Length: 123
Image (cartoon, rainbow, N blue to C red; front, side, top):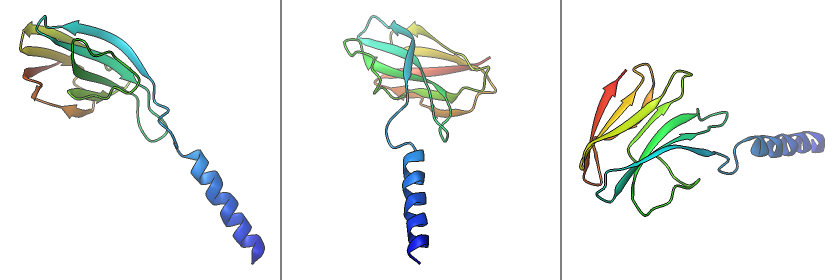
């Protein structure tokens, strides 16, 4: 009986440490573009892990905010299926056009963030 409990405890510890116990994701900045009105669009690539796929993400930030590893998408995010690319273009001070591959699985697709209208175009 002691041997079975030992195996269960060892298995439980191994299972715990094999799971993502910390935030091991990495953000890689792709582009930043400002609307000249105090808001910038930040496009970045977030690496995933065994249970979370890599993704392209967009956040709208105040122009004085710095991009960091803690940034998360507040505007748009899509799975990297090997073909995904994301492009952004300000079409006015309060409208941002986001272009992405039609086959990409989207997770976040907001219509308005921080007073900015978000328009989407599938390629």
